[in-house]
Length: 312
Image 1 (cartoon, helix red, strand yellow):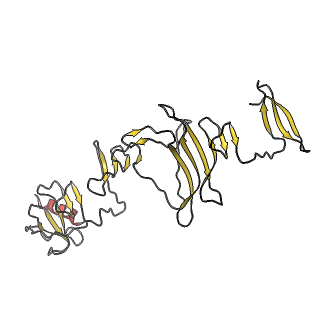
Image 2 (tube, rainbow, N blue to C red):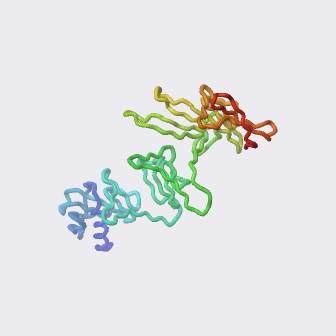
Image 3 (cartoon, rainbow, N blue to C red):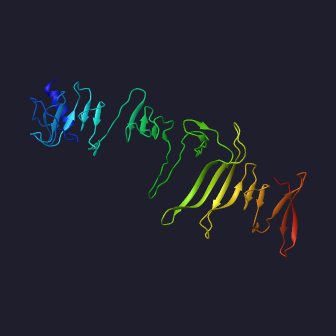
């Protein structure tokens, strides 16, 4: 191997954070060559690996690079397991400068970038060859795919923005999906299962507490292509710490206010309906659909019936 190449390789290794290496060294004509600020080549390891440390006498610090055939490089390790293996247990890899870029280039199939927090990690962070990011999964199916976890945005001014820029009437939507089983082996959801919740919470000094939420759940027996569902609207009253259901829209289209089981298009329980605008009232249509009347009240408090023609 040419000395100039050895010096260059040693410079790359010695310029990084180094782990201490105390193995016996073989002498080298390049010993003492400076490679980086305060870094010097001190010799070869037993199998031909280059060793450099942060003093000419080789007594302090160190880094070991390369295996016997020099097809793998190790920084902070004497036994590199990959083309580049960095292991010092503390500092990791840092890119400094303006600009400073750590770049991974993959021209073939498979994962381009992967981070594990332990050997055989089942929940890695990866970027695949199509630019999809997987957190907790090594096979992302979307631009960002998070498995078995949640995404949290925190801080002043935090917001989530959905924009669709295209020459079409379509727009973004929020998708809540529910299955039984597991992510790799899903099974059909069942009657009564919750499909999703939109919740608004406030901090009480100790923890977040529910203020209001909307829930969708399966309301009836589902079948292939059909999922009957209802919506429940809940708010928390001032005198209680537990939310109370205020309104429900059933899978049949019935609306209940103060009741979770409305029997008509609009059912109001435990309360009144107040129409405050003068001249307005309750409009009824005749069975044949040809006449409509408004039930109202005059200034003397008497009930009035006013014809309004055909109503839709």
